[in-house]
Length: 377
Ligand SMILES: Cc1cc2nc3c(=O)[nH]c(=O)nc-3n(C[C@H](O)[C@H](O)[C@H](O)COP(=O)(O)OP(=O)(O)OC[C@H]3O[C@@H](n4cnc5c(N)ncnc54)[C@H](O)[C@@H]3O)c2cc1C
Image (cartoon, rainbow, N blue to C red; front, top):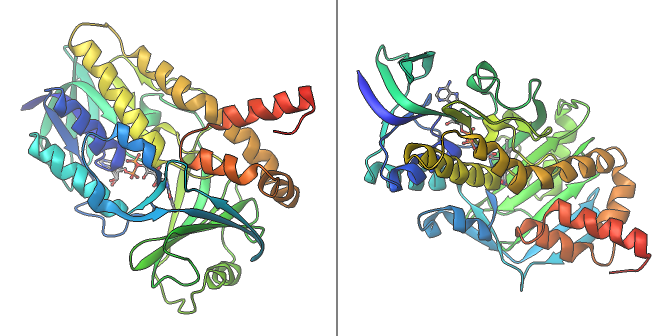
Protein backbone atom coordinates (compact mmCIF):
# COMPACT_ATOMS: atom_id res chain seq x y z
CA UNK A 1 0.00 0.00 0.00
CA UNK A 2 1.30 3.45 -0.94
CA UNK A 3 1.34 6.10 1.77
CA UNK A 4 1.33 9.87 1.31
CA UNK A 5 1.09 12.95 3.50
CA UNK A 6 -1.87 14.19 1.47
CA UNK A 7 -4.22 12.64 -1.09
CA UNK A 8 -6.22 14.97 -3.31
CA UNK A 9 -9.35 13.80 -5.11
CA UNK A 10 -9.62 15.73 -8.39
CA UNK A 11 -6.77 17.09 -10.50
CA UNK A 12 -8.48 20.22 -11.90
CA UNK A 13 -7.32 23.75 -11.11
CA UNK A 14 -7.98 23.63 -7.38
CA UNK A 15 -6.66 20.08 -6.93
CA UNK A 16 -3.45 20.67 -8.87
CA UNK A 17 -2.71 24.06 -7.31
CA UNK A 18 -3.30 22.68 -3.80
CA UNK A 19 -0.90 19.86 -4.72
CA UNK A 20 1.75 22.31 -5.94
CA UNK A 21 1.48 24.50 -2.84
CA UNK A 22 1.90 21.43 -0.60
CA UNK A 23 4.74 19.92 -2.61
CA UNK A 24 6.65 23.19 -2.38
CA UNK A 25 6.40 22.89 1.39
CA UNK A 26 8.03 19.45 1.16
CA UNK A 27 5.05 17.09 1.54
CA UNK A 28 4.30 13.95 -0.47
CA UNK A 29 1.11 14.24 -2.52
CA UNK A 30 -1.00 11.84 -4.59
CA UNK A 31 -3.71 13.17 -6.92
CA UNK A 32 -6.52 10.89 -8.06
CA UNK A 33 -8.09 12.21 -11.28
CA UNK A 34 -11.13 10.78 -13.06
CA UNK A 35 -10.31 11.87 -16.63
CA UNK A 36 -7.31 10.94 -18.79
CA UNK A 37 -7.18 14.44 -20.25
CA UNK A 38 -9.75 17.15 -20.94
CA UNK A 39 -9.26 18.80 -24.32
CA UNK A 40 -11.80 21.53 -23.76
CA UNK A 41 -12.51 22.84 -20.27
CA UNK A 42 -15.85 24.60 -19.92
CA UNK A 43 -14.30 27.80 -18.58
CA UNK A 44 -13.95 31.21 -20.26
CA UNK A 45 -10.60 31.80 -18.54
CA UNK A 46 -11.20 35.35 -17.25
CA UNK A 47 -8.87 35.99 -14.36
CA UNK A 48 -7.70 38.98 -12.34
CA UNK A 49 -3.96 39.32 -12.87
CA UNK A 50 -3.61 40.12 -9.17
CA UNK A 51 -4.26 36.41 -8.55
CA UNK A 52 -0.73 35.60 -9.62
CA UNK A 53 0.22 36.12 -5.99
CA UNK A 54 -1.59 32.84 -5.26
CA UNK A 55 0.20 30.97 -8.06
CA UNK A 56 3.68 29.70 -7.25
CA UNK A 57 4.79 29.61 -10.92
CA UNK A 58 4.99 31.74 -14.03
CA UNK A 59 1.85 31.30 -16.15
CA UNK A 60 2.74 33.69 -18.99
CA UNK A 61 2.38 30.87 -21.56
CA UNK A 62 -1.27 30.35 -20.61
CA UNK A 63 -2.24 34.03 -21.02
CA UNK A 64 -3.94 34.52 -24.39
CA UNK A 65 -5.24 38.10 -23.99
CA UNK A 66 -4.61 41.04 -21.71
CA UNK A 67 -7.85 42.96 -21.42
CA UNK A 68 -8.01 46.75 -21.61
CA UNK A 69 -11.77 47.26 -22.02
CA UNK A 70 -14.90 45.70 -20.64
CA UNK A 71 -17.96 46.19 -22.78
CA UNK A 72 -21.52 45.82 -21.50
CA UNK A 73 -24.61 45.59 -23.69
CA UNK A 74 -28.30 45.45 -23.02
CA UNK A 75 -29.90 43.23 -25.70
CA UNK A 76 -27.13 43.99 -28.17
CA UNK A 77 -27.18 47.77 -27.72
CA UNK A 78 -27.00 50.50 -25.04
CA UNK A 79 -23.26 49.99 -24.81
CA UNK A 80 -21.24 50.86 -21.71
CA UNK A 81 -17.46 50.72 -21.82
CA UNK A 82 -15.26 50.26 -18.77
CA UNK A 83 -11.61 51.13 -19.28
CA UNK A 84 -9.28 48.75 -17.47
CA UNK A 85 -6.05 50.58 -18.25
CA UNK A 86 -4.50 52.06 -15.16
CA UNK A 87 -6.13 49.31 -13.08
CA UNK A 88 -4.48 45.91 -12.61
CA UNK A 89 -5.28 44.16 -15.87
CA UNK A 90 -7.66 41.30 -16.40
CA UNK A 91 -6.31 38.29 -18.27
CA UNK A 92 -7.89 35.65 -20.44
CA UNK A 93 -6.05 32.41 -19.94
CA UNK A 94 -6.51 29.12 -21.76
CA UNK A 95 -7.64 26.83 -18.97
CA UNK A 96 -6.29 23.63 -20.54
CA UNK A 97 -2.84 25.29 -20.71
CA UNK A 98 -3.02 26.73 -17.19
CA UNK A 99 -4.07 23.40 -15.65
CA UNK A 100 -1.32 21.59 -17.59
CA UNK A 101 1.36 24.10 -16.51
CA UNK A 102 0.43 23.64 -12.86
CA UNK A 103 0.29 19.85 -13.16
CA UNK A 104 3.68 19.75 -14.92
CA UNK A 105 5.24 21.93 -12.22
CA UNK A 106 3.71 19.71 -9.52
CA UNK A 107 5.11 16.62 -11.26
CA UNK A 108 8.53 18.30 -11.29
CA UNK A 109 8.19 18.65 -7.51
CA UNK A 110 7.45 14.93 -7.20
CA UNK A 111 3.64 14.73 -7.25
CA UNK A 112 2.19 11.34 -8.08
CA UNK A 113 -1.00 11.20 -10.10
CA UNK A 114 -3.20 8.30 -11.05
CA UNK A 115 -5.57 8.85 -13.97
CA UNK A 116 -8.09 7.82 -15.04
CA UNK A 117 -9.21 6.63 -11.61
CA UNK A 118 -11.87 7.45 -9.05
CA UNK A 119 -11.97 6.97 -5.31
CA UNK A 120 -14.51 4.21 -4.59
CA UNK A 121 -14.35 3.93 -0.83
CA UNK A 122 -12.84 6.16 1.86
CA UNK A 123 -12.53 5.32 5.55
CA UNK A 124 -10.32 6.08 8.52
CA UNK A 125 -8.02 3.50 10.10
CA UNK A 126 -5.52 4.30 12.86
CA UNK A 127 -5.82 8.06 12.26
CA UNK A 128 -5.10 7.67 8.55
CA UNK A 129 -7.35 7.90 5.50
CA UNK A 130 -7.61 4.71 3.47
CA UNK A 131 -8.80 5.16 -0.10
CA UNK A 132 -9.67 2.29 -2.40
CA UNK A 133 -9.63 3.24 -6.03
CA UNK A 134 -11.26 2.07 -9.23
CA UNK A 135 -7.80 0.85 -10.36
CA UNK A 136 -8.00 -1.81 -7.59
CA UNK A 137 -5.21 -0.17 -5.58
CA UNK A 138 -5.52 1.19 -2.06
CA UNK A 139 -3.73 4.32 -0.85
CA UNK A 140 -3.23 5.86 2.61
CA UNK A 141 -2.70 9.44 3.73
CA UNK A 142 -2.61 11.64 6.81
CA UNK A 143 -4.79 14.35 5.20
CA UNK A 144 -7.38 14.39 2.47
CA UNK A 145 -8.36 17.22 0.10
CA UNK A 146 -11.64 17.09 -1.81
CA UNK A 147 -11.29 18.89 -5.17
CA UNK A 148 -13.74 16.99 -7.38
CA UNK A 149 -15.50 20.05 -8.80
CA UNK A 150 -19.12 21.07 -9.15
CA UNK A 151 -20.44 17.50 -9.42
CA UNK A 152 -18.60 16.58 -6.23
CA UNK A 153 -19.63 13.34 -4.64
CA UNK A 154 -17.26 13.53 -1.69
CA UNK A 155 -18.13 16.98 -0.27
CA UNK A 156 -21.59 15.72 0.76
CA UNK A 157 -20.15 12.43 2.04
CA UNK A 158 -18.03 14.41 4.55
CA UNK A 159 -20.77 17.00 5.20
CA UNK A 160 -18.66 19.83 3.83
CA UNK A 161 -20.17 22.96 2.27
CA UNK A 162 -23.91 23.56 1.79
CA UNK A 163 -26.24 20.61 2.38
CA UNK A 164 -28.24 21.58 -0.69
CA UNK A 165 -25.81 23.20 -3.14
CA UNK A 166 -27.12 25.87 -5.51
CA UNK A 167 -26.20 25.65 -9.16
CA UNK A 168 -25.86 28.03 -12.09
CA UNK A 169 -26.89 26.46 -15.38
CA UNK A 170 -24.21 27.15 -17.99
CA UNK A 171 -23.36 26.56 -21.63
CA UNK A 172 -19.76 26.92 -22.83
CA UNK A 173 -18.38 26.98 -26.34
CA UNK A 174 -15.18 27.97 -28.08
CA UNK A 175 -15.51 29.43 -31.57
CA UNK A 176 -12.75 29.94 -34.13
CA UNK A 177 -12.08 33.55 -35.12
CA UNK A 178 -12.91 36.67 -33.12
CA UNK A 179 -16.39 37.66 -34.33
CA UNK A 180 -17.19 41.18 -33.10
CA UNK A 181 -14.97 40.81 -30.04
CA UNK A 182 -11.78 42.91 -30.14
CA UNK A 183 -8.62 41.16 -28.94
CA UNK A 184 -8.30 43.32 -25.84
CA UNK A 185 -12.00 43.48 -24.82
CA UNK A 186 -14.44 41.23 -23.04
CA UNK A 187 -18.16 41.58 -23.58
CA UNK A 188 -20.95 41.03 -21.05
CA UNK A 189 -24.40 40.78 -22.62
CA UNK A 190 -27.46 41.30 -20.41
CA UNK A 191 -31.14 41.11 -21.22
CA UNK A 192 -31.18 38.10 -23.55
CA UNK A 193 -30.63 35.37 -20.94
CA UNK A 194 -33.38 35.18 -18.35
CA UNK A 195 -32.00 35.33 -14.79
CA UNK A 196 -28.44 35.53 -16.07
CA UNK A 197 -26.16 36.84 -18.79
CA UNK A 198 -23.88 35.86 -21.66
CA UNK A 199 -20.18 36.60 -22.04
CA UNK A 200 -17.56 36.54 -24.78
CA UNK A 201 -13.87 36.41 -23.83
CA UNK A 202 -11.21 36.49 -26.60
CA UNK A 203 -8.34 34.00 -26.88
CA UNK A 204 -5.55 34.36 -29.49
CA UNK A 205 -7.46 32.71 -32.34
CA UNK A 206 -10.88 32.04 -30.92
CA UNK A 207 -13.50 33.28 -28.48
CA UNK A 208 -14.82 31.59 -25.35
CA UNK A 209 -18.55 32.17 -25.16
CA UNK A 210 -20.63 31.39 -22.13
CA UNK A 211 -24.28 31.62 -21.13
CA UNK A 212 -25.34 31.32 -17.52
CA UNK A 213 -28.45 31.56 -15.36
CA UNK A 214 -28.08 32.20 -11.66
CA UNK A 215 -31.43 32.23 -9.86
CA UNK A 216 -34.71 30.32 -9.78
CA UNK A 217 -33.14 27.20 -11.31
CA UNK A 218 -33.66 28.68 -14.76
CA UNK A 219 -32.53 26.42 -17.58
CA UNK A 220 -30.92 27.33 -20.88
CA UNK A 221 -33.14 25.10 -22.98
CA UNK A 222 -34.22 27.48 -25.76
CA UNK A 223 -31.70 26.61 -28.50
CA UNK A 224 -33.04 29.21 -30.93
CA UNK A 225 -32.55 31.98 -28.38
CA UNK A 226 -29.12 30.67 -27.40
CA UNK A 227 -28.07 30.75 -31.07
CA UNK A 228 -29.36 34.29 -31.43
CA UNK A 229 -27.14 35.36 -28.53
CA UNK A 230 -24.14 33.65 -30.07
CA UNK A 231 -24.86 35.40 -33.41
CA UNK A 232 -24.93 38.74 -31.55
CA UNK A 233 -21.22 38.15 -30.77
CA UNK A 234 -20.52 37.98 -34.52
CA UNK A 235 -20.57 34.26 -35.26
CA UNK A 236 -22.67 32.73 -38.05
CA UNK A 237 -21.42 29.14 -38.13
CA UNK A 238 -23.40 27.46 -35.38
CA UNK A 239 -22.06 23.92 -35.93
CA UNK A 240 -20.00 24.03 -32.76
CA UNK A 241 -19.70 21.80 -29.75
CA UNK A 242 -21.61 23.14 -26.75
CA UNK A 243 -20.77 21.93 -23.26
CA UNK A 244 -23.52 22.15 -20.68
CA UNK A 245 -22.46 22.29 -17.07
CA UNK A 246 -24.07 22.85 -13.70
CA UNK A 247 -21.77 25.09 -11.73
CA UNK A 248 -21.93 25.10 -7.93
CA UNK A 249 -22.22 28.67 -6.71
CA UNK A 250 -21.63 30.25 -3.32
CA UNK A 251 -24.62 29.78 -1.05
CA UNK A 252 -23.84 30.85 2.49
CA UNK A 253 -21.10 30.42 5.08
CA UNK A 254 -20.42 26.74 5.71
CA UNK A 255 -17.91 24.51 7.34
CA UNK A 256 -15.32 23.50 4.76
CA UNK A 257 -13.28 21.16 6.91
CA UNK A 258 -13.58 18.44 9.48
CA UNK A 259 -10.80 16.52 11.16
CA UNK A 260 -8.02 15.98 8.58
CA UNK A 261 -10.15 16.63 5.53
CA UNK A 262 -11.05 19.82 3.70
CA UNK A 263 -12.73 20.86 0.46
CA UNK A 264 -11.48 23.38 -2.16
CA UNK A 265 -12.69 25.09 -5.35
CA UNK A 266 -16.04 24.30 -6.95
CA UNK A 267 -16.55 21.27 -4.71
CA UNK A 268 -16.67 23.77 -1.83
CA UNK A 269 -19.35 25.87 -3.62
CA UNK A 270 -17.12 28.93 -3.85
CA UNK A 271 -18.03 30.25 -7.32
CA UNK A 272 -19.19 33.85 -7.48
CA UNK A 273 -23.04 33.73 -7.64
CA UNK A 274 -23.17 36.95 -9.70
CA UNK A 275 -20.45 36.53 -12.36
CA UNK A 276 -19.47 32.81 -12.15
CA UNK A 277 -15.91 33.67 -11.23
CA UNK A 278 -14.36 30.45 -9.98
CA UNK A 279 -10.65 30.67 -10.80
CA UNK A 280 -9.99 33.20 -8.06
CA UNK A 281 -11.67 31.18 -5.25
CA UNK A 282 -10.01 28.01 -6.53
CA UNK A 283 -6.59 29.62 -6.16
CA UNK A 284 -7.42 31.28 -2.84
CA UNK A 285 -8.82 28.05 -1.35
CA UNK A 286 -5.83 26.05 -2.64
CA UNK A 287 -3.47 28.51 -0.99
CA UNK A 288 -5.21 28.48 2.41
CA UNK A 289 -5.74 24.70 2.26
CA UNK A 290 -1.99 24.18 1.93
CA UNK A 291 -1.28 26.72 4.68
CA UNK A 292 -3.59 25.01 7.20
CA UNK A 293 -2.47 21.47 6.38
CA UNK A 294 1.14 22.65 6.74
CA UNK A 295 0.34 24.18 10.15
CA UNK A 296 -1.13 20.87 11.31
CA UNK A 297 1.63 18.69 9.92
CA UNK A 298 4.33 20.92 11.35
CA UNK A 299 2.54 20.83 14.74
CA UNK A 300 1.85 24.57 14.79
CA UNK A 301 -1.85 23.81 15.09
CA UNK A 302 -3.88 20.74 15.99
CA UNK A 303 -6.83 21.25 13.67
CA UNK A 304 -7.83 22.57 10.26
CA UNK A 305 -10.52 24.97 11.51
CA UNK A 306 -8.48 28.01 10.48
CA UNK A 307 -9.14 26.95 6.88
CA UNK A 308 -12.94 27.41 6.99
CA UNK A 309 -12.44 30.72 8.82
CA UNK A 310 -9.91 32.00 6.29
CA UNK A 311 -12.12 31.16 3.31
CA UNK A 312 -15.22 32.63 4.89
CA UNK A 313 -13.25 35.81 5.73
CA UNK A 314 -11.25 36.23 2.54
CA UNK A 315 -13.95 35.13 0.10
CA UNK A 316 -17.30 34.42 1.76
CA UNK A 317 -17.88 37.95 3.04
CA UNK A 318 -17.67 39.37 -0.46
CA UNK A 319 -19.78 36.54 -1.90
CA UNK A 320 -22.56 37.16 0.63
CA UNK A 321 -22.94 40.58 -1.05
CA UNK A 322 -22.46 39.05 -4.52
CA UNK A 323 -25.39 36.76 -3.80
CA UNK A 324 -27.61 39.65 -2.68
CA UNK A 325 -26.65 41.68 -5.75
CA UNK A 326 -27.37 38.69 -8.03
CA UNK A 327 -30.79 38.15 -6.52
CA UNK A 328 -31.87 41.73 -7.16
CA UNK A 329 -30.04 42.20 -10.46
CA UNK A 330 -31.25 39.01 -12.16
CA UNK A 331 -34.83 39.53 -10.94
CA UNK A 332 -34.98 43.10 -12.23
CA UNK A 333 -32.24 43.10 -14.87
CA UNK A 334 -33.38 46.18 -16.79
CA UNK A 335 -33.37 48.33 -13.67
CA UNK A 336 -30.15 46.62 -12.58
CA UNK A 337 -28.53 47.57 -15.89
CA UNK A 338 -29.70 51.19 -15.64
CA UNK A 339 -28.68 51.64 -12.01
CA UNK A 340 -25.80 49.21 -11.69
CA UNK A 341 -24.01 49.40 -15.03
CA UNK A 342 -25.01 52.79 -16.50
CA UNK A 343 -24.26 54.89 -13.41
CA UNK A 344 -21.43 57.35 -13.98
CA UNK A 345 -19.00 55.67 -11.60
CA UNK A 346 -20.08 52.08 -12.36
CA UNK A 347 -17.50 51.29 -15.08
CA UNK A 348 -14.62 52.14 -12.75
CA UNK A 349 -16.12 50.07 -9.92
CA UNK A 350 -16.73 47.11 -12.24
CA UNK A 351 -13.13 47.32 -13.43
CA UNK A 352 -12.00 47.28 -9.80
CA UNK A 353 -14.14 44.22 -9.04
CA UNK A 354 -12.80 42.32 -12.06
CA UNK A 355 -9.21 43.19 -11.25
CA UNK A 356 -9.64 42.04 -7.66
CA UNK A 357 -8.95 45.51 -6.27
CA UNK A 358 -12.42 45.76 -4.72
CA UNK A 359 -14.91 43.25 -3.38
CA UNK A 360 -18.70 43.24 -3.54
CA UNK A 361 -18.54 44.01 0.16
CA UNK A 362 -16.59 47.24 -0.49
CA UNK A 363 -19.12 48.30 -3.11
CA UNK A 364 -22.09 47.54 -0.88
CA UNK A 365 -20.50 49.53 1.94
CA UNK A 366 -20.06 52.50 -0.41
CA UNK A 367 -23.69 52.29 -1.50
CA UNK A 368 -24.86 52.24 2.11
CA UNK A 369 -22.54 55.13 2.96
CA UNK A 370 -23.85 57.07 -0.02
CA UNK A 371 -27.41 56.50 1.10
CA UNK A 372 -26.55 57.66 4.59
CA UNK A 373 -24.61 60.74 3.53
CA UNK A 374 -26.66 61.33 0.36
CA UNK A 375 -23.68 62.34 -1.71
CA UNK A 376 -22.37 61.14 -5.06
CA UNK A 377 -18.97 59.40 -5.13
C1 LIG B 1 -19.08 27.90 -18.72
C2 LIG B 1 -18.16 28.32 -17.62
C3 LIG B 1 -17.34 29.44 -17.76
C4 LIG B 1 -16.53 29.84 -16.72
N1 LIG B 1 -15.74 30.94 -16.89
C5 LIG B 1 -14.97 31.37 -15.87
C6 LIG B 1 -14.15 32.52 -16.02
O1 LIG B 1 -14.08 33.14 -17.08
N2 LIG B 1 -13.43 32.93 -14.95
C7 LIG B 1 -13.45 32.28 -13.76
O2 LIG B 1 -12.81 32.72 -12.80
N3 LIG B 1 -14.19 31.14 -13.61
C8 LIG B 1 -14.93 30.67 -14.63
N4 LIG B 1 -15.66 29.53 -14.49
C9 LIG B 1 -15.55 28.76 -13.23
C10 LIG B 1 -14.26 27.91 -13.20
O3 LIG B 1 -14.11 27.23 -14.42
C11 LIG B 1 -14.34 26.90 -12.05
O4 LIG B 1 -14.67 27.56 -10.87
C12 LIG B 1 -13.01 26.14 -11.88
O5 LIG B 1 -12.80 25.32 -12.99
C13 LIG B 1 -13.04 25.28 -10.63
O6 LIG B 1 -11.91 24.42 -10.61
P1 LIG B 1 -11.97 23.08 -9.76
O7 LIG B 1 -10.61 22.47 -9.85
O8 LIG B 1 -12.52 23.33 -8.42
O9 LIG B 1 -13.01 22.17 -10.53
P2 LIG B 1 -12.82 21.45 -11.95
O10 LIG B 1 -12.01 22.28 -12.86
O11 LIG B 1 -14.18 21.04 -12.37
O12 LIG B 1 -11.95 20.17 -11.58
C14 LIG B 1 -12.48 19.07 -10.88
C15 LIG B 1 -11.66 17.86 -11.29
O13 LIG B 1 -12.06 16.74 -10.51
C16 LIG B 1 -12.18 15.60 -11.36
N5 LIG B 1 -13.13 14.70 -10.71
C17 LIG B 1 -14.46 14.85 -10.60
N6 LIG B 1 -14.98 13.82 -9.88
C18 LIG B 1 -13.94 13.03 -9.54
C19 LIG B 1 -13.82 11.82 -8.79
N7 LIG B 1 -14.89 11.23 -8.24
N8 LIG B 1 -12.59 11.27 -8.64
C20 LIG B 1 -11.49 11.86 -9.19
N9 LIG B 1 -11.54 13.00 -9.91
C21 LIG B 1 -12.75 13.58 -10.07
C22 LIG B 1 -12.66 16.17 -12.69
O14 LIG B 1 -12.37 15.31 -13.76
C23 LIG B 1 -11.88 17.49 -12.75
O15 LIG B 1 -10.63 17.33 -13.38
C24 LIG B 1 -16.48 29.09 -15.52
C25 LIG B 1 -17.26 27.94 -15.39
C26 LIG B 1 -18.09 27.55 -16.42
C27 LIG B 1 -18.92 26.31 -16.27
